[in-house]
Amino acid sequence: MKIQNVRNTWLDSDHCLRIATVQLKGKEFRHPEREQTLTKVMRSDPAAEMIEDEVADKLQNLIEDDADLDAEVDVNELWKDLKDTIFGAVKGRKLLFWPQSSKITKGTMDLIKKRTQLRLRMQRKKVVPEKLKLELREIRKKVRLGIKKDRIQFFEDIAKEAEIASRVGDSKGVFSALRKATGTKGGAVDLRNADVDKFVQHFQDLVGVSESKVPEECKSKKAWKIAEEWLGDKSRYEKEWEVDTGPPTWEEMKKAAAMGKPEKAVNLSEIPSEVWRKSESSLKVLWKLMRVLWVRMSEESEDDQMPEDWIDATLVCLYKG
Image (cartoon, rainbow, N blue to C red; front, side, top):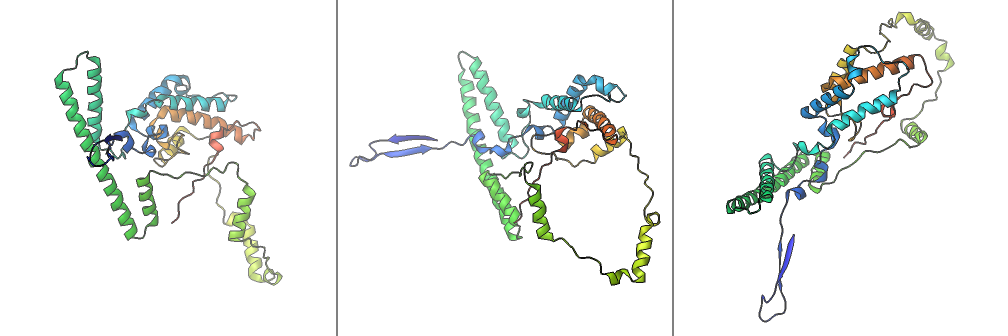
């Protein structure tokens, strides 16, 4: 915002006129929540290709070897290497991907990029031609008009979304529209250090705990004795366990990765499900790690070296209107 005073506006007054010029820039129009995190970047196809190449290059000895890992391998260290390799492949690449949900349209962004390129060309020249100055002036004008148009369209879309949600009684939709307009966002609750006993007590009070016992007269009935005898013989109703309890095979691992829901991750700074589905090299390293841990857990080893990322949980509290 540029503010300046214009004095001597009225000859018979010592007051002055204050003029304010407001210029809307692209960076101000894009709210912080629209900035892409590395997790969101990793969901794209170009990022998946970079991750695949990086993992295949740095962990080549693990991928090409069909044999299982050494039983004494440090799982935590290997998992850390895999994570660092995946994040290292896309680190610093956030600017290569523009968010599809941005409030600035693709046409306006193309003009902004063109304006940046033109400025760089002018900086390289000692004497700037008049033609380049005129071209830059025209592009600036188009950018201002484009951003103004995008801004109006953005708030019109929000107003329409809130109006429809209010008409059908969707309070959550109204809340979401207001949150978009104000640029605020919610967050997840971290319960890693919470008192679990209080939660147990809360749900026991909420649901109730039954302490009633079966009366002796019911147990003396013939029907009760028949049912108790029938249920005592588990071979009558329990099927034989036909599930392979060995470590997962490569085919089972690929099938499990394909079943993962898209756009899902533990939080905004972890590996999304798309990486395991699109990067076969990363999935193969993870599969070998799981086979080692599977054997250790089946042997009830005291030191199973389970990575902390695999046992931490994140609770997301959903908004209820």
